Image 1 (cartoon, rainbow, N blue to C red):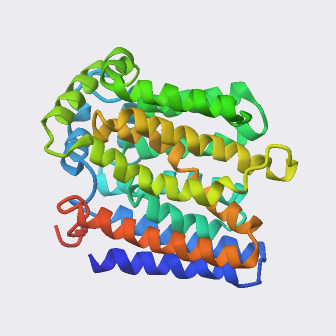
Image 2 (cartoon, helix red, strand yellow):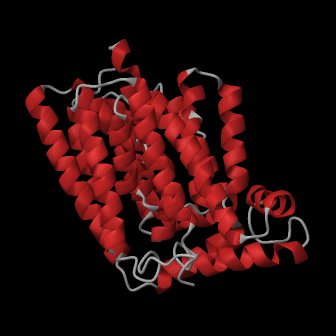
Length: 357
């Protein structure tokens, strides 16, 4: 586990430099981002028997050549990525892991550099939010990286380009379809009536969440939905305790962020739009996590915008509040990072590499 905390400390120190050191030269910032990116590419690329669904993805990579196109039980986009990689680049699985890590890191880092006032801080938050999303990616992480870069077209109000990117993401993981409302949510303006409507709607959906998932689950995959519902019913974990734990962290950030929302201020248009996406992620998590932790992951397409919102809040905050934000966020991220690793026994721990297989 020590190696994970070494990487965590590495990212933390770089984020502290980003926030507290006055030197803002682009060349230095890009160089430091590149150093962190290379670190994560190597860390994700050389792993072996380490990561989410390791055996399933390795088996899929090995047997895809003997399966008909469209008959591999995974999304056609991911299937074609694997087929093309094996036919054009390499049949080595480690090479494919490097490819996936480079794909995620290049796209994600580009989006963070473009939109975050403190991109190194954003990278630290990304590591805290999702170690897998930092480079260990499976299909959904590949998909989320694309939806993150689609923010460019949300901000530019280019609907067709946005839809194309989201549909491409959905070809890798069908759940990306849930990100389509983001285009309109970005320009949404809250008032008391709308807040009450959303609260009532959310409560209604929580009560009937399983029926909603059964009805609309075909958007993800009817077979997967049936399997996930079964897994959700068989678990010993109380889904509502999971809901409460998940909401506590989200509401902590909500309290930090809500005071900076100003729909009338053009300079905060990006922040207010991203805040809308984050709130919608809370709604999605509230509706679907009572069914299963797996369905709660649908909110990840929106939750990830915390890594842009918190640096923006830090930018707008006065000196004392900046310190509070940094201390609270750092303490929470360390707790979340440690909790995630402790709960990932056999998934990320122990960290094995190609040199120890």
